[in-house]
Image (cartoon, rainbow, N blue to C red; front, side, top):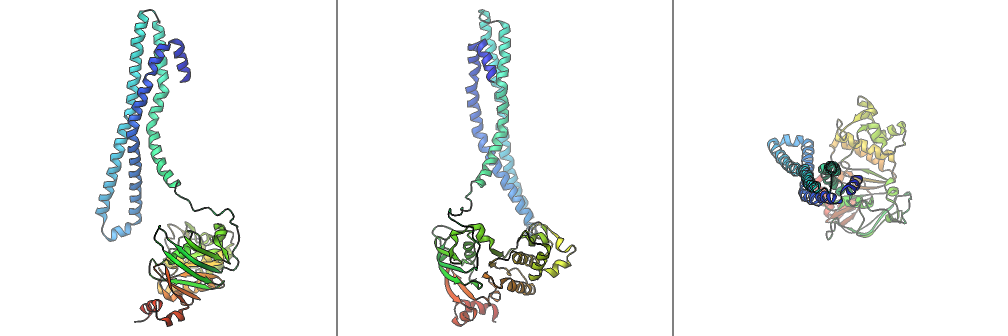
Length: 430
C-alpha cells in the first residue's frame, strides 16, 4: 500500500490526491454501516446465547417437560427465540453485505475520475496516455488492500460481539485474594470460635446477626432452624467463600483471615446435600479426596463409608465408569462415595450440610454409621433438618432469621420446651 502510493506520487501528485479523496468517503460509509451492524451482531450473539441456554435447559429438564405435558409450550418458546436469532442475524448480514458493494462503487468512481481528469491532462499534453493507463492500474492496486480489509470487517464485527460476551464473564470479580501477610499453616486441633459475626449477601440485609459460639477441638456442633435462617451461610463463612461484615472467625485461636484459603480448605472435608461426582471411575472419584492415595487406601476409605459392599457388586467394581454426575447409581450410593472421599481426605474439620436429606430411611442407617465413624476425633459442623442426625451432637444451635435463639445439647433443649422442642415433637411425636 505504501509502495503503491509512493509510485503514484512520483508519477502524478495531482492524480494521487484525487485518488486519495475516496478514503474519507470510504471511512464515512464504513462508519455508517458498522454503527448499525455492530449493534445487530451483539443482538445476534445475545439471541444465540439465549437459544443455546434454552436448549440446554430443555434437554436437562426433559423428564419434567414430559411429566407436565409441556412439549407444545417448549416448542413454541423455542421457535420464538429461534425467530429472534434469525431476524437479528438476517439484518446483520444484510446491512454488512453493503460493505463490498460500497467499496466497488468507490473504486469505480476513483477509476472514472482518473480517466476523466487524466484524459483532460493528456489533451493538454501534460501526461501521456500510457502513464494514465499505468496510473489507473496502480490506483486499483492501491485500493485492493483496503477492499480486503473491508471485506473482513464483517467477520471482525461478529468476532468482537462474541468476544464482548466472553470478556463480560472474564471481567467478573474473582474471589478476593489472600491478604499479603497470610500464611500457609496447617490446622492442628480444629477448635472453632465465632466472635460476634454478622454477614449479609446483599447490602442492608443481614443473613447472620451477631453470631457467637465456641466449638472445642474434636467436638461437634449442629445448626437447625427454618429454611433461610442462615445455617449454610455459617459453613460458607468458615470456608471463606465469603467474608464476614463484622466480627471474627478463629480456628485454633487464629483468625482465618491470616491463613491462606488453600491451607484452610485443605484441612476441611465436605459432605454436601447434592453429592457431585466427576466423569470417571468410582476409584478416581474417591481418590479425589487425596490424589496420592493407593488403591488399598481407597478401598479402606470405602469400607469405612459403608460403600465397599455395593461397589463390589457392580460389574466392574471400583473401575465402574460413572457419567453425567454419577448416573447409573442411586442417590444414596453417590452419597456413600462422597463420604468415602471425605474419609480419604482425612480432614481436621468436617462439614456436613444436609448429608442425609435425599436418602431413604434404610440407606440413612448405613450413612449414619459411616458419618459416625468419619466424625470420630474430628471437629464437625452439621446442618440438618432431620433431627435424628444431630441428636448426638455436643452442641446444637437453633437459628431463626439469622439470630441464635437457643443453644445446648439435645437433652437441654428438650427440657427448655422452646423452638427446638416443638420442632422435635413435630417430627417424632404424634
